[in-house]
Image 1 (spheres, rainbow, N blue to C red):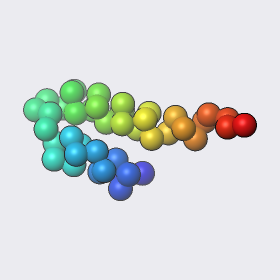
Image 2 (cartoon, rainbow, N blue to C red):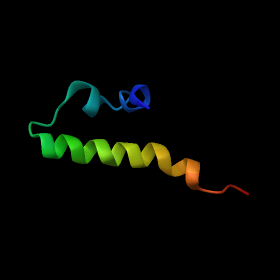
Image 3 (cartoon, one colour):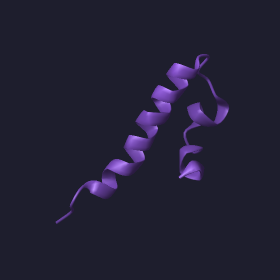
Length: 42
């Protein structure tokens, strides 16, 4: 999971100055990666 999160340039280079905004984007990136696994494809 960490390797896939590092593909987001914003996470890999730590653009965000505050820990709260960094954690917020980290959560958004994780949702973007995990959401397709919960969707049932027909």
